[in-house]
Length: 490
Image 1 (cartoon, rainbow, N blue to C red):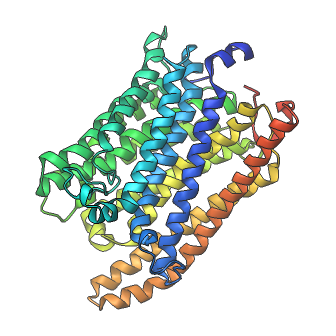
Image 2: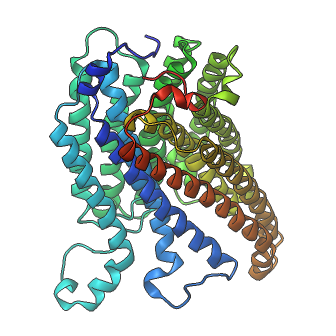
Image 3: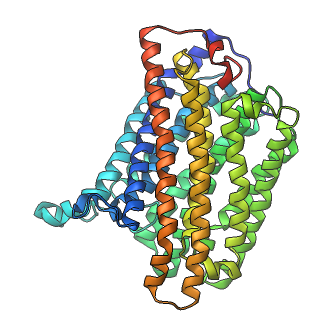
């Protein structure tokens, strides 16, 4: 069936959705986003020799670079997705989650997992090295040596148990739904299964069962599947839910939505080895990853076509409806990301940009430019509905959008272009210092682009705080007052 919102009365909707829980997830997500942005800024300042915290071991950019990535993946994205799921799943199934108490337990437990991961990364190695009682532990308090899998070994079982509880809590109402399932729910069901398996594969196999190129191959699968089998299905599923609601029309093509789902399921798990081209991993695996990556880009193109065809005839919504603008800006960035990815996974182009800032720009473009923008659009749409109060300042909402979207465009363009320069520096066999000096202008631009993004989030945080104050002090005002930012009151 084509995704569109099922009708619910306000009273029934309040029984289905715990609005306080949704808001709590969103606020937690934004806190971790702020931490991640500050950690990323620390790393950016280090590269241009402007680090204001030199000589402080626990605030070293090397440690906080891991905080930067983990806080975005598990702090911001996971929390924001869980909040959006608590809004969307009950409204699509007309049933609440299995247990509201379990939902609150998962909320508290997940914040513990994320905070414990951060503490393990920052103080774990130092603490274990300096406290005799901790030196004989069979597991490490510090980070593991796997990108996006740096969670200390003792946290991994807790995180995996949490993912299982999340799956049970949401799959119960989905399995009880009668009639054909919306495509949105297909994506959600797949994500619950894929995320559990992906996390187990990446955090346990290289640590306990595999070594050498085998561990590298599985690590590559984990890095990419965390994006493709956790972030992507949840992001696409939410877009298939929210876009028809805000545009007040069904998706253009149900068939293309199915192509997107099955294409993602078939091709994406084969992509991970493209992170390790020109390594001792067998070439047939590298060639298979290249082919499947290009195939996935074609699949993503069908999804983007479907959404832009749905927008046809409603183009003015980009101007008047801010959440829609967030969503479609993310889709434009998605198209650019996929074009870039198809290029960089060819052996010819990879020889130039391997290990350069091109890859860093690509990662920022997809994680912030696409999925974080979609989630920001969802939050912009939902917070007034969660608190029954219009935004304190529509102007600050606009500043949030323009600083975020503009800062991301500048940062991604700067890093991608800088990566090409770095590749040519290295190919010329010039001394390493030449490439570092040549990268300085690009890294300085990256600092100011990051400041723009950070400024946008500060606008959003302040606007959110003032909106919350008004909701507490003045009570709910009519949601129609927020019309420039959204449409239907539901």
